[in-house]
Length: 463
Image 1 (tube, rainbow, N blue to C red):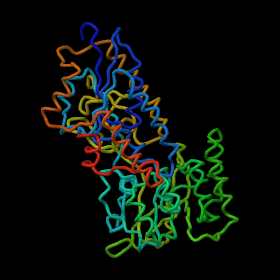
Image 2 (cartoon, rainbow, N blue to C red; image 1 turned 30 degrees about the horizontal axis):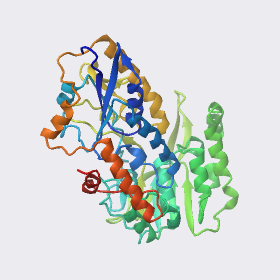
Image 3 (spheres, one colour; image 1 turned 90 degrees about the vertical axis):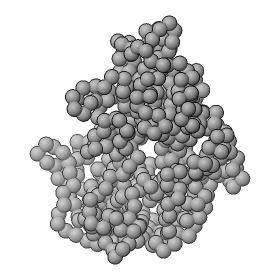
Image 4 (tube, one colour; image 1 turned 90 degrees about the horizontal axis):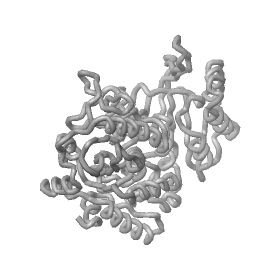
């Protein structure tokens, strides 16, 4: 790097981790040089799961976009949407034009349960349902028919599982005021769902949901949250768990919120959410399509290492359901030419530096942040300190050494994409999409009406 030329960084993945990393990078100086960042995403739109994953009835969470917008307006920032890594641009091309490359591509694929019947019709990963009702281009052409479905099982009790339960249970009139995809709203209008099973393998004290999430289910209009007293009562092991985690008040509050449902019994509302605890699916039942699920009842144990686990009791039951969504964890996608840990679903790394899978040593100039770095954990804000930690390493590495002979001129990458006929979307192009969606939403009383196909999005961006 010579003269006053900046440190140039490519960030792939325009979700929360990507934006937090960009924000931090743009504040840095490296040996007197400023930092410039190009943020890439395979979709024409930025914001990742904030746009395509956060439930439509949680509009306040999406307000974080205002912070990302401020970052995008800082000097030294550029957005390249509709650019697919490995196809439109390769790792060798990126390393020829940038001093460093950071991957923040998240964890979009679901984990399988590995039980019989998992591939029956109407057995789905929750991620695709979430993408579908959020208007994600990857999933907008999927078909979910709820007109013949009365009972739905949702396996897992993390935030995605809770979102799915809520969208299925909430009144269509309430959802019609959100940015839910219009085609999804039409399907939900015809829904016959009257019972939703929320199935957790551990107890309420260990549940992954937050206090606001479970409280929201308890307060939904037209819905009863029904629990079984024997699954909520605390035995000695559960009391010990709560005592050890007394500093984390979420656990005890979850117990209190759920326990408060017991006196209400079955309730009086038309729709029921049946929150079950200490149950694990062992088989999805049905002939050609989902008709039920076989559950093994569990108990909480503490093993020799002091870890609390759900252990099967060999006691089984079957419950009827017409559709099933699994939400038991997520993992990242491998990227062409980049090391990948298939077991953990992440890019192997040491504190954010990408590792060679053979030598276990860092690969110069390659970095990770967010879920593709650590796995799917935490909430949106968790990615901020995680990104900052990786940026700190990037700055330290850049201060020690720079590669020479790179083509880091500002026009090099736009010229490369033009030669490849890539119809990339700039941030100004995204702002045009944004205006169209907000205007379309205003006509029908929604915050926005999302464009859900790549051609529509590109056309709105003027591409």
